[in-house]
Length: 296
Image (tube, rainbow, N blue to C red; front, side, top):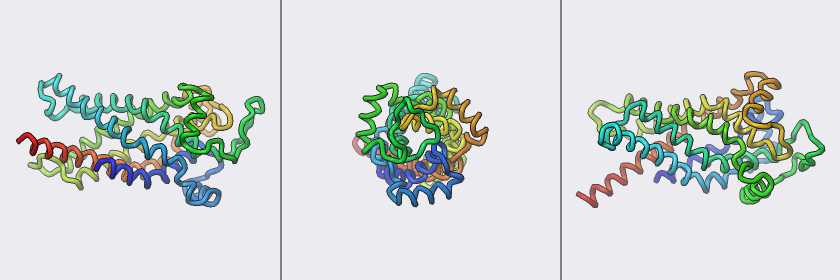
């Protein structure tokens, strides 16, 4: 049930992520509308779904691990503090569990994001060319698909290449998941009527959406850096690392560059996170109900 909700929303989310990535790491897009029109004009409808197959195939594993780590870390902390894993966690425990989930997510999500972004950005022209690097002619696809992209990056850049931008992703996801799970916990408790043991689906949907919008909106600056680092290398390597990317981006485009795509991120964060939390909570309820029926 959880995967159904997640995969359904991922298809809707990919178009928004496509625009966010191109605004952040691409060239020649003035705003979101211009980006949408340019992609459609140059690449038709298929352009909005580039790089989708790989994350679609891995989202079930990724989401299960992230939510599983978060939930089990909370239970472990409650067990250690109070001797009862089922006890409602304190705010500090939610924050720590969120940080652990964010850290673990990078190990799984970084290669997936890199392949997705490389596929999305490979038809983008570059402005500065370094002849010594002999880059592929811009405007022509470098990768034939996600598997070819994965194998090519692994062969040419090694494991380190697959985790290019992982430092920026870590700086995005560790605080990002804190601003994901903490607001969700707060809003869920606030919206849920007194006397109810658990939140109803509409409360979960609303709290999850608000949490997603907050998390993705505030994560945008490091998302810009991560996208640029991961897109870097399709034709040539421009950045030496996270700090170099931050400094170059600021020197060339000013502070506003770190907020590119913030509207798209915040808007897409709502439905994606609503589906994610709703699927998660409904799955938990279903499993608990089955467990109760099996062991009355």
